[in-house]
View 1 (cartoon, protein in one colour):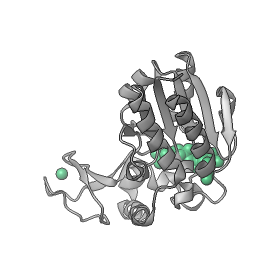
View 2: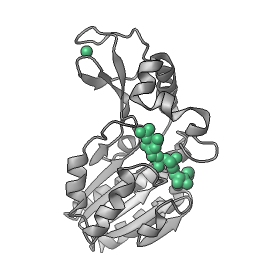
View 3: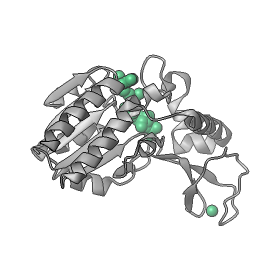
View 4: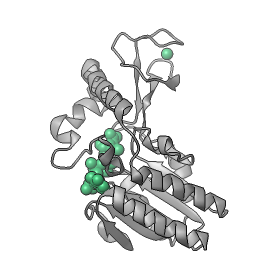
Length: 238
Ligand code: OAD
Ligand code: ZN
């Protein structure tokens, strides 16, 4: 097997065919909702009800969503890499739980999770699959201050120390279904290149930073990711 320390980065494109919607495509979520209103701490302070409505709707649509062949291929790849004694970390910008539903275990949600809440008053976090309202009380401190445990613009993404440590030592970095518009995730390819890793982009079309990758394969994630992962699994198996 050529690669032993693999990092995969996924974005909304990997879940598009599961019906979760992307952000910056022509009919994307940010064309219908204002990012400043629903994805910033200031927006939440201004109008928490609007923010809850937005994430409640997304959480409800997640209940209907199932993993697609791209999620499943990445879970299979993790199994094959680990069986061969290698290391694989899947870093996702997605707040859905479709990677774990497909069987991925070595997974880091750098932008948080829709099905988790956090109390803005006492800081406790917990699993949550219901609608949230402005008067929903925290189960620990009683404050009406629960918010989705998702990372908003202006907040620090999760797991950055662990991610940069792995990027600095990876030999394969693959970016999947992300527009490359949002930092720090968009800068990961640079870190990987600095570490001497082979870098691959799998996306519907070349992203904003496609030129930074040594290889690109383009098309629907359900096909391209499945084919690319199956190729690699075959190589690992020989
Ligand atoms: P974007 O909407 O910016 O980009 C999605 C990418 O997926 C685009 O490059 C599309 O071409 C591609 N795509 C769409 N459908 C696809 C398909 N079926 N197969 C393969 N690729 C497809 O979403 P992200 O890059 O994930 O953050 O956005 C990054 C962050 O910006 C999100 O995590 C979110 C958002 O604002 C926060 O809310 C903090
Ligand atoms: Zn609390």
